[in-house]
Image (cartoon, rainbow over the protein chains, first blue to last red):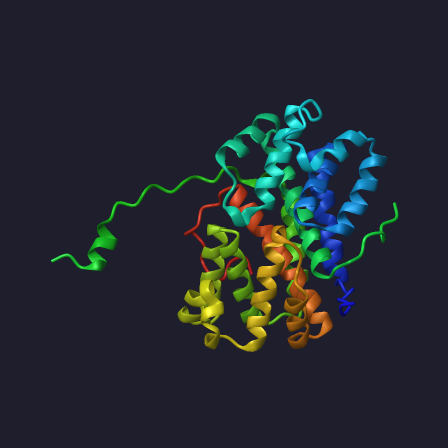
Length: 149
Length: 169
């Protein structure tokens, strides 16, 4: 058994993170798509707490179980996601895996075809926000299951 | 005679690429929340240390705008050129940094490159030796926040080179 990590998260930090996520989701205006984006980023970042929480929320929002089941292989899952969802997921991956280098023009432009500038700005904000949560939860190794909705 | 300096001043650089969009104007509530988050996350952190953390995360995430801003801010805050230049190879130039700074830089890398898997115990424990619990929680939050800024900077291709230190405090 390894030593426990801190459970501390400054209240002002937590409130600002919640405000950021809320503003991003509101501006995107598509709660079901938001959950797909957030779950995919949490898969890439290996955030157990975030996956547990957002899979529960996604089910509440009526995201089809099949879309959740196949999310880790969305590119290969023909007929499960529409073009708009696929553009958002491709952008999610590019913006999440920055360490491999930049956000390709093709990925950005594909997203810009399906989201106007204001929605695109909020979609990117949502991806940045969940990346923020992923880091704070993984670094402190917060266990899954704490979420109640 | 052509000197290195002449070459640099007469070289024809490629034109600056425009930003993909002005996101802060299109998402003002998001921008406000980010600024609030940034302010909250750096409370209690040493400013010199946090600039090093921000530069290193921005290097790993390839955020040109952020590297420009935070390198200039660090210099303006009294940081040495040497310590900024060596940041990209800090593991090989440890004698430029304190043990505490090195622990923070190691944690920065682990928390930034999450897609390669988790934050190793030895990295976390080393940081926990040098930072008290509240300070460590703030450091983790602060690393997460610069990662968020990096994502805006890179995705919208915000142009580097225009930051004047003293702004965006």
